[in-house]
Length: 81
Image (cartoon, rainbow, N blue to C red; front, top):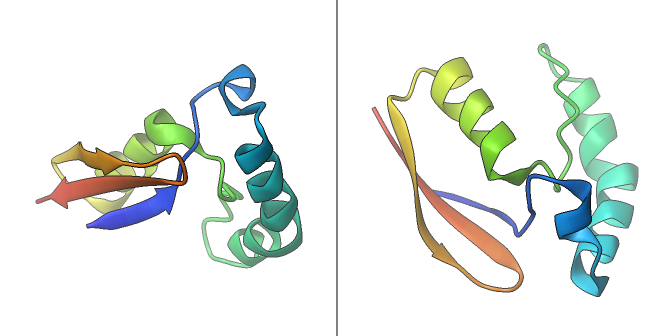
């Protein structure tokens, strides 16, 4: 199970107060941490489900990813082998 901040796949989907807060936190914490990792994807917290699917399913070896729940603040995904 993966719980991520709610984000759309396009910038236009993320122009709301919650996403703006997430973008600011992402710039300060998530992106630098991601860049320090081996693959350096720099996704931050506003990656969107499409990009998460690419990274998790294709990059991490899972066979599929399902959205099982969402709130205005979080996206809950199930990754299955």
